[in-house]
Length: 249
Image 1 (tube, rainbow, N blue to C red):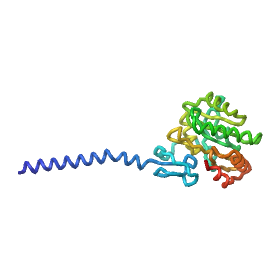
Image 2: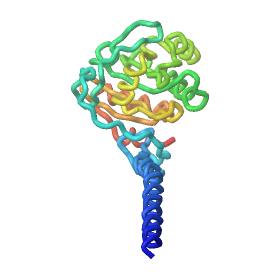
Image 3: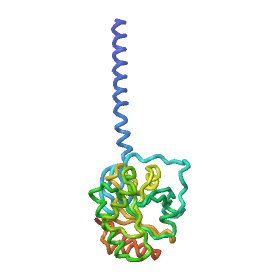
Image 4: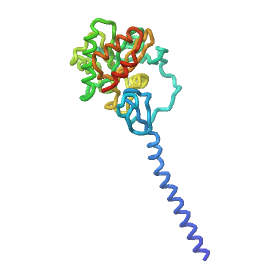
């Protein structure tokens, strides 16, 4: 009788142990699901734990990797110190020249920034074509265009220069790439970081650094709308009604 009780106890303990193992094996999936974050490519501040649409622009939310924990490491200190903290990381332009992103390309200027990669066959060519039309329409006004690569491992300065030539990029349009850590830091600061390059934001950042006026708009907005928004920002004001209207694909 004692032997039977002993064996039953062993079996019961074994069964409990198996249940615990199954629960442990299943828990990472639940943690991964809980860690999933969906963000708007256009408005990176919009985040959700579920797939859906952005309440601001109605674009589909894109799943991102789990957000990186906050860090206090000694990364390069942002030089702007303004509304949009832009790190002064070293980048390469389309001519292979080393530039500091904030101090050389943004500081004191009116800038228009988009995000591309040269192997892209979907949204990037229209983004480039829109930039080209806007640059031509603005003429000789003091506005600087910057296209930031989201694929620095592939996009060499030579590739960026050839890509820009397809759109007849004029003077004042700079294409930048660089070492991946620095480019990743820059993309995060600009709200353009994505788990996959194909999921990068189609938004355009328009800013007047001297007057600390910044806004975002849809990268494929009508040329006339984008030109008006740029001129307003250049004058030190951002017409939010135009910016919101421009967010509609």
